[in-house]
Image (cartoon, rainbow, N blue to C red; front, side, top):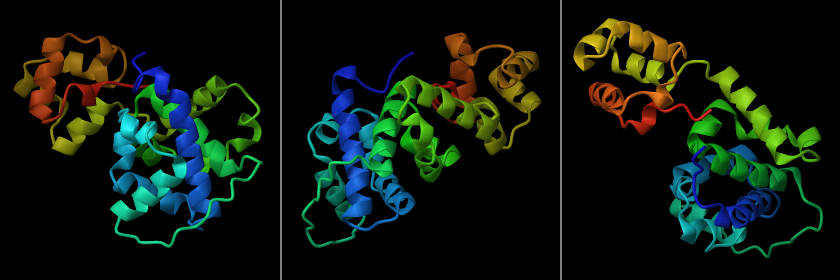
Length: 213
């Protein structure tokens, strides 16, 4: 599996996201879901998820929280961080979510679209006492349950094309397209030419067609 960025930065990224959420909720008094939406809309989530070192390693969680608010045009007075000795559920949520995003290479926006951040926090018990890989397994189950359709099927429907129309425009057989959509064939192992033609017709990237989970 190809991860989102070099593992060298993973531990720092996990602690940064963890501290950002803890600080936003307990010191800045934001609702967890509200602040995570700001994190995504600010553009910092995308930079974080693609391994921008200036974000995942060059800032503390507190600094990142303030930068998110500033980017969203929300000014706030400086608050002295309390740095509680006990790790909150929100801290764990950021810590675990950063790992899962790195592990799957899914964007934060894609993850939260199907698994709300509040639902991730609800996994604190019992998963905070388990190996992080067990958390990832549970997240994969939740993601697949919330998103049973493949990226190909979703993108084809959004484009307004039937399977037959996509086949005619791409030069790929209807049966092959059906097999990809039904996961009879693994689209991640598809020939590059096939992916290129489908992506061209659907006006997306070849990477958009890949199944991360």
